[in-house]
Length: 208
Image (cartoon, rainbow, N blue to C red; front, side, top):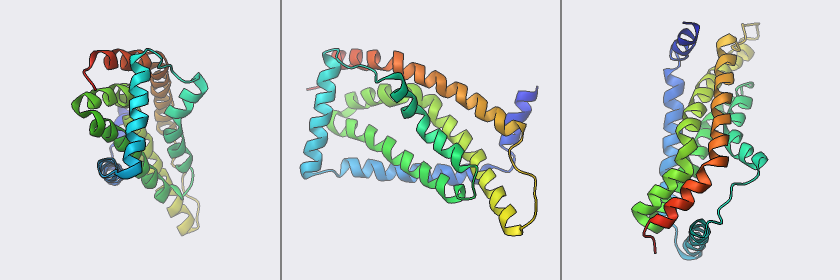
């Protein structure tokens, strides 16, 4: 099948890009976890107060999804940034940095819940960030790997100062389109399901 051939081509010669992005994402995640665990003083108090207010709102059933436009921005901003960087040689640096920052913010958010509420907080974080993250994070890696490869091709084209075939073939746009469909489904999940799931879990879990 044509689709299987396209996805098979994604793995050909792109393992280094995947390893670089995975390392940046994991490094950012480690730093985020350390930052959440090491919070102290006013920072820790502010974090505890924020999460306590969030939990109280969830338990009361007052947790509401943001506007659809805000939800789209929340889901699409990182993949969109990666796609834009993939159209420039700047993406050679910008895409790994974006992965590091994304890993930091995601792990900091999850680790903050665990730090304050223990295992129950981990479950809440899984519902809050993992319901759509199970799709959006792999999509980010698909777009990041092909974007980093495209940025590299553009950089080589500039350095050699001669015309080379641009890396934006049918497979590139097919993966972008399929990723867009997955992200649209993530927006739907975040908007329609996540508030109810988190509110229900917050009401059932024994969290002081």
